[in-house]
Length: 477
Image (cartoon, rainbow, N blue to C red; front, side):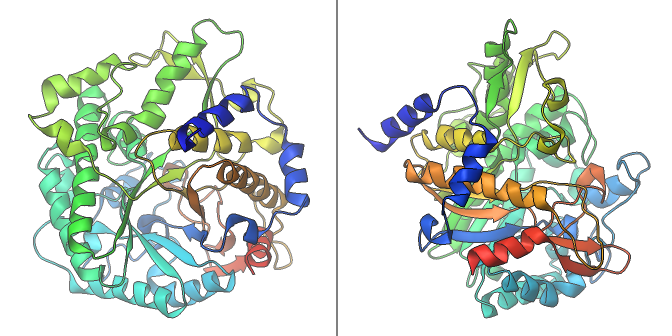
């Protein structure tokens, strides 16, 4: 039996039912440790430029779509923005020392496109290059690998004014940016991720309008999807060309999808959700094209948007795929959601216990992590997986100088148990990044949800390591 057959068999044996939470707790208490993951397993946290840096107008930085979007009334639920955020731009040195004190050996961060190219193309901002050189050098001096994300949602506003992701010219604009970044930092940065969650920034930003730039409709979504998929592959080719010994990847938001029990049409609804959430960007990268067999509306991309030779241009042999998982999704048939004809059954309508629902309204389902790792690993062409984001927001409070977050501690114990289980069964998962190092600006939710291992008092910028951060410090020691 080869590895693919073993993975499929393991997934079948797991069955449709989720394992109860006590299983993973007993598994953890039964003795798994850092050593069980292997000597070369990667441990890190993940961040994003707009969510932590602040300094939005300093040292030559140009405006991004999130600078514009967050300043417009009604776009962020709390009326907040990322102007200051965690002030990482000024505090990176002490923050990275704090990160190292928790015993992580890798730090994932993104480059702000407009710090390097304020207008998206053209004149280079040397102060932006200097800043990231300092961050990279500080990581290396502390013995932490810098893992760089090229695009984490902050498109230059100057390019959005020219059509943004709906304009095919973005392939050239993005290529110019990747050429600059890889030549500036590739002598020291060997681990690269091209895009962060392309379905999220195209779906939320160009279909639903909930995220920057706030556009809506299929006429925006489909070209944005295709051009992002082209940039995903082209970015990979540029990295490989410019960076010797590069480890080239990209990241996807993924969720294990289940049909709602005893709901007519739920199986097909789940398949459509799976195609949209999990297959839309990984299959073109693997040379399989878009999953239009399950989502017929995607055929419009090939019929009206793609150009001759694009199917080949979409494919790239990535060294690893970054998977970002937070929850499973339960699907039912719906007549009120056009194109998809499916809707989610939210946790509160499924009698999920309150302590298994995060501040984002997401269900805590560790088994979903195990199942989606199995599912993605079964693709031919997936040689290595890194969990590039996993975490949870809970209502943290600072009391007597401490933050006790037992639900987050339990979350990480349970999810890591499932990652280890998948690894032991043959899934080639070789690293794990927590989301996130610091509490930060959580896009349209503002600063209310707290995902960090480190509490941030936004009024004073004081950092306090939470109990979950202390747990990792002990686990990774």
